[in-house]
Amino acid sequence: MTTVAMRRRLIPRRWRRLSLRSARLRLTLMYSGLFLLLGTAIVVVIFLVVQTGDAIAVSGSRAVSAVPDRAGSIVHNVVSQQHSADVARVLAVSWLTLVLAAGASAVLGWFAAGRVLRPLRQMTAGARAITAGNLHERLALAGPDDEFKQLGDTVDDLLSRLEASFAAQRRFVANAAHELRTPLTLERTLLQVALSDPNASVASFRAVCEELLTSGRNQERLLEALLTLATSERGLEYREPVDLVPLVHREAETVGAESEQRQIEITLELAPARVRGDRAMMERLIANLLDNAVRHNVEGGRVQVTTKVAGDRAVLRVVNGGETIHPGDLERLFEPFQRGGAQRTAANGHYGLGLSIARAIVLAHDGEITAEPAPGGGLLVTVSLPSEPIAAVAV
Image 1 (cartoon, rainbow, N blue to C red):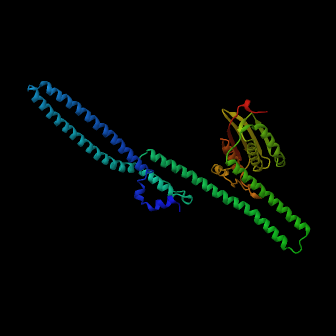
Image 2: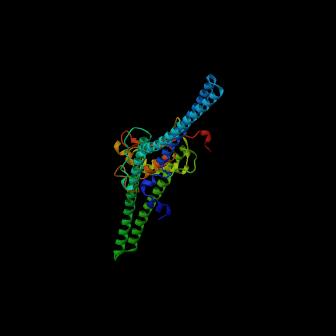
Image 3: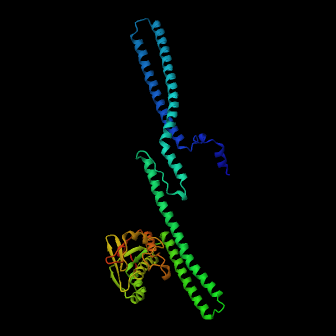
């Protein structure tokens, strides 16, 4: 236990409030100090006024006095002494009143500061009681819509975002563990079957090894996708001008073999569209969108890719045919390990991370990504990114 902690345990809680670090005590001292300063100024003004009035009264009495000089001098001295005593009495009463009023102002200021700071203490106690296990609780601060109420509502909004983030993280970890456990179980089963077969041949062992290699490659792709997702969510460290058109051409050629095999027509309508960001991430973004558009399509389907500039935004649109997607399922498609149909299974190398990675990349580039059902079935994905002037892009 540290020295500070021991001191806090030895000092009663009621006395801790008297620490100069207490906002309540500082407010009380400020109220009392201002009152004392103002009261002192008033007493000084009263003293000056009384002194001036006494001097005028005494000099006036000397001027109009009809008694002889010696008698007038005696009268003047008596009047001066009486006035001095009156001034001293007024000052004494004023200072005593000021001291008593300052004490009363300190007491009233203490309770007033406590009343003003009560919502802040409630927020502090509520925030301390909220942990990772009860993020569903809120401060729910009552009272008028003042600065404290606005601060409490802001903290509640922050807790709502944290709760959603923690829930998404837990789902992500659970799904990742499930996706990794399934191939590991398969690999163990293959090895156990091969080792338990007394008549196993070289060919059977080779077949088992090939299946293990396939499973290992799938796990490698999954881990690479998870790493890409984590890297994208951290944001960008370096930005450079990037032209989307050649990237789309390159990725369209990459998926060309699979699209021809499944008789999927790819149409490109590409106008100059340039952004400022990470080139590798932009390549991964376009690759994920085109890969999803082809592999989640139907036989003989279509894929249309469009790039253009609208105002100060570079727009990339990818439309593909396929199953009809319910509008309520669109947001779920952007979550990790969420698949929109029966074809989206880990068995064929799909882990449901494509759109999650795409959204992370877009958000890292200060952009927006939306999805909506395409006419006739399939999906329409629209990416909007801050555009880069043409002159700024290096050839």
